[in-house]
Image (cartoon, rainbow, N blue to C red):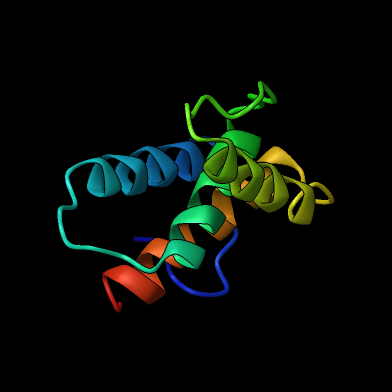
Length: 94
């Protein structure tokens, strides 16, 4: 994990983002829906994937679309940082 206040290179940011995504992909404990929606939005923006949500449940698609709309003002790099911070502070509690 990077030191607070230290500027990360693009490579360091990408590596830390991939590690956070890997951690979340193997995480099995239940999480609050609002946290999952933020992670979803940051992940999609970080990967520049603006496709419509793919759930078969319209209500879930609506929540996902809303999460993306709320985060639309950030760029991919900021989305990666926010994803990493959310994982570290809210899930890993680092």
